[in-house]
Figure 1 (cartoon, rainbow, N blue to C red):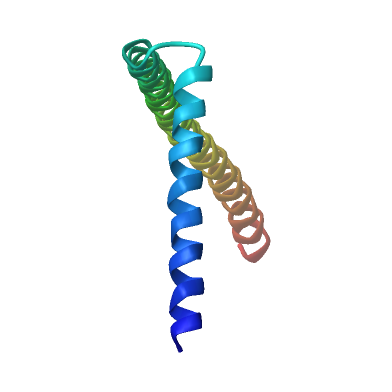
Figure 2: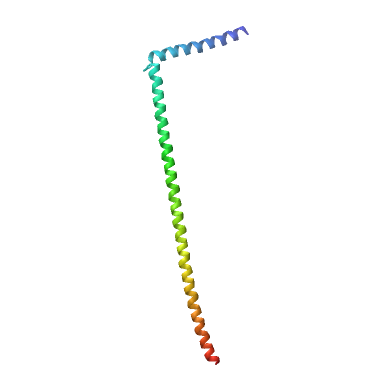
Length: 115
Protein backbone atom coordinates (compact mmCIF):
# COMPACT_ATOMS: atom_id res chain seq x y z
CA UNK A 1 0.00 0.00 0.00
CA UNK A 2 2.84 2.37 0.79
CA UNK A 3 4.33 1.70 -2.63
CA UNK A 4 1.05 2.75 -4.32
CA UNK A 5 0.91 6.00 -2.30
CA UNK A 6 4.53 6.66 -3.22
CA UNK A 7 3.77 6.17 -6.94
CA UNK A 8 0.73 8.49 -6.75
CA UNK A 9 2.80 11.15 -5.00
CA UNK A 10 5.56 10.83 -7.57
CA UNK A 11 3.05 11.18 -10.44
CA UNK A 12 1.51 14.25 -8.81
CA UNK A 13 4.94 15.85 -8.37
CA UNK A 14 5.78 15.12 -12.02
CA UNK A 15 2.58 16.86 -13.14
CA UNK A 16 3.19 19.91 -10.91
CA UNK A 17 6.85 20.07 -11.93
CA UNK A 18 5.93 19.82 -15.62
CA UNK A 19 3.41 22.62 -15.18
CA UNK A 20 5.99 24.85 -13.51
CA UNK A 21 8.59 24.15 -16.19
CA UNK A 22 6.00 24.73 -18.96
CA UNK A 23 4.88 28.02 -17.43
CA UNK A 24 8.48 29.17 -17.07
CA UNK A 25 9.26 28.32 -20.68
CA UNK A 26 6.08 30.05 -21.83
CA UNK A 27 7.09 33.23 -20.00
CA UNK A 28 10.62 33.11 -21.40
CA UNK A 29 9.56 32.37 -24.96
CA UNK A 30 6.39 34.50 -25.11
CA UNK A 31 6.47 36.91 -28.07
CA UNK A 32 4.83 39.70 -26.02
CA UNK A 33 4.50 40.79 -22.44
CA UNK A 34 1.43 39.90 -20.40
CA UNK A 35 0.08 43.44 -20.71
CA UNK A 36 0.48 43.39 -24.49
CA UNK A 37 -1.16 39.96 -24.69
CA UNK A 38 -4.14 41.10 -22.62
CA UNK A 39 -4.47 44.23 -24.77
CA UNK A 40 -4.38 42.04 -27.89
CA UNK A 41 -7.10 39.81 -26.49
CA UNK A 42 -9.29 42.83 -25.68
CA UNK A 43 -8.75 44.29 -29.18
CA UNK A 44 -9.53 40.96 -30.81
CA UNK A 45 -12.68 40.56 -28.70
CA UNK A 46 -13.89 44.08 -29.54
CA UNK A 47 -13.27 43.41 -33.24
CA UNK A 48 -15.31 40.23 -33.07
CA UNK A 49 -18.04 42.11 -31.16
CA UNK A 50 -18.25 44.91 -33.73
CA UNK A 51 -18.33 42.37 -36.59
CA UNK A 52 -21.15 40.46 -34.90
CA UNK A 53 -23.04 43.74 -34.27
CA UNK A 54 -22.66 44.62 -37.94
CA UNK A 55 -23.88 41.16 -38.97
CA UNK A 56 -26.93 41.47 -36.68
CA UNK A 57 -27.75 44.93 -38.08
CA UNK A 58 -27.42 43.68 -41.67
CA UNK A 59 -29.58 40.67 -40.87
CA UNK A 60 -32.23 42.93 -39.31
CA UNK A 61 -32.15 45.21 -42.35
CA UNK A 62 -32.51 42.21 -44.69
CA UNK A 63 -35.46 40.85 -42.71
CA UNK A 64 -37.14 44.27 -42.66
CA UNK A 65 -36.58 44.69 -46.40
CA UNK A 66 -37.96 41.20 -47.03
CA UNK A 67 -41.06 41.86 -44.91
CA UNK A 68 -41.69 45.18 -46.67
CA UNK A 69 -41.31 43.51 -50.05
CA UNK A 70 -43.73 40.73 -49.13
CA UNK A 71 -46.23 43.27 -47.77
CA UNK A 72 -46.08 45.34 -50.97
CA UNK A 73 -46.52 42.26 -53.14
CA UNK A 74 -49.45 41.08 -51.05
CA UNK A 75 -51.10 44.51 -51.34
CA UNK A 76 -50.53 44.47 -55.10
CA UNK A 77 -52.04 40.98 -55.41
CA UNK A 78 -55.04 42.02 -53.32
CA UNK A 79 -55.51 45.15 -55.44
CA UNK A 80 -55.21 43.15 -58.68
CA UNK A 81 -57.64 40.61 -57.29
CA UNK A 82 -60.19 43.34 -56.66
CA UNK A 83 -59.70 44.69 -60.16
CA UNK A 84 -60.01 41.21 -61.63
CA UNK A 85 -63.15 40.61 -59.68
CA UNK A 86 -64.59 43.97 -60.86
CA UNK A 87 -63.73 43.03 -64.46
CA UNK A 88 -65.34 39.62 -63.95
CA UNK A 89 -68.45 41.30 -62.53
CA UNK A 90 -68.62 43.62 -65.53
CA UNK A 91 -68.30 40.68 -67.93
CA UNK A 92 -70.99 38.80 -66.05
CA UNK A 93 -73.34 41.80 -66.13
CA UNK A 94 -72.69 42.18 -69.85
CA UNK A 95 -73.46 38.49 -70.43
CA UNK A 96 -76.65 38.72 -68.35
CA UNK A 97 -77.72 41.82 -70.30
CA UNK A 98 -77.10 40.02 -73.61
CA UNK A 99 -79.05 37.02 -72.31
CA UNK A 100 -81.92 39.26 -71.21
CA UNK A 101 -82.03 40.91 -74.64
CA UNK A 102 -81.99 37.49 -76.31
CA UNK A 103 -84.84 36.27 -74.09
CA UNK A 104 -86.82 39.45 -74.85
CA UNK A 105 -86.44 38.81 -78.61
CA UNK A 106 -87.59 35.22 -78.15
CA UNK A 107 -90.60 36.37 -76.11
CA UNK A 108 -91.58 38.80 -78.89
CA UNK A 109 -91.25 36.04 -81.51
CA UNK A 110 -93.40 33.67 -79.43
CA UNK A 111 -96.01 36.31 -78.76
CA UNK A 112 -96.28 37.05 -82.53
CA UNK A 113 -96.61 33.35 -83.28
CA UNK A 114 -99.25 32.80 -80.64
CA UNK A 115 -100.99 35.86 -81.57
